[in-house]
Each structure stands twice: as structure tokens, then as C-alpha cells.
Image (cartoon, rainbow, N blue to C red; front, side, top):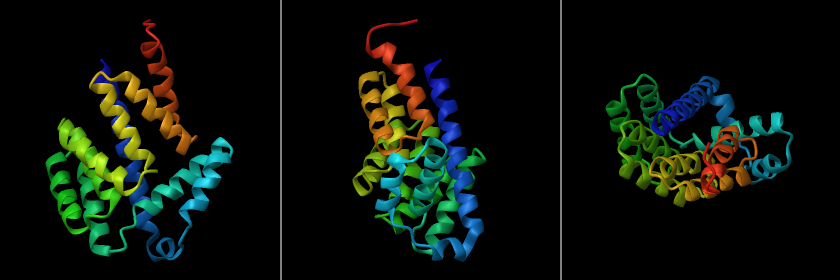
Length: 192
């Protein structure tokens, strides 16, 4: 039951990520020409009303998806498209090529972690999440993935800690808030 629930959450995360990627790709040069100060966005994210915070979180994710190379962006798009279409092995291949060619691109590792997670390859998913977080410690999507892995490996206390970290960085994360509400009774020893 927990695994199927986490799979459903994961599917929504993949869909949101892929949709954001397609929107970003559609804006082309105009969106790429607008450089945004991530520190400023993160400052605004912490104090913005919930509706505005969601938009700011999307702007941050948009920035994270920019590798600086059209060829690398194409590999990311192909990998995410394959993942969205359920072609997990093809997604892993595209995203592995991306990681090989852009080893400092945190979004590449996070995307491949999602593909590994979808393939139920938890060890490689965890390794990629750790790399993504080493490259970008504020990557709240990677943190959500880490929390999900803790949850499915029956470490609710660790999952709760990471979901709380997600909310510190991105107070607009409804999935993290929902997970905290779901995990608190388990961690406190209360089961329904």
C-alpha cells in the first residue's frame, strides 16, 4: 500500500517535472535570455503567500533545467519524455548520456534518479540524488526524492526530517506537507 501510494506521488512529480520541461522548451530563446538570481528567488520563496510561492518554485525549477547547452537540454528533454511515456530504460540511457557529458548538472542526476526510482533501482536512485544534492543542496525536488526513498525503505523518522527540510526551502510544497502529516503519527508511535 505504501509503495503504491509513493509510486502515485512519484508519478505526479515526474509529470510536473516533465510538464515544466516542455513549457520551458516552448519558450525558447526568450526564456533563456532572462537570467534570474536564484538567491533572490529563494528569499522570496520563503516569505511569499502560498499562491505566489508556487510560481516562484516553478521559476527556480525552470532555472535548474538550464544546462547552458542546447545538446544537453535535448538529452534532458528526451530522457524526461521517455520517462513520461513509460519508457524507463530509454530514459535511463538518455539521462546517463547527459550525466556523462554534463557531470556538474544537478538536474541531470535528479532526472536520472527519478528514472531509476521508476525502475525500482533504489540504490542507483539514491546515489544520483546524493550527487544532485552535493551539486545543489537546495534542490527541493531531489530532497523529496530522498524522503520518498527513506519512506519506502521503512525509515519514517529520516523521511520526516527530509520532508521538513523541503518545507524550510520550499514552503509551497504541498507534497512535503502531506507527507509530514502522514508520517507524524507513525513517528510518534500512533497508528490508525
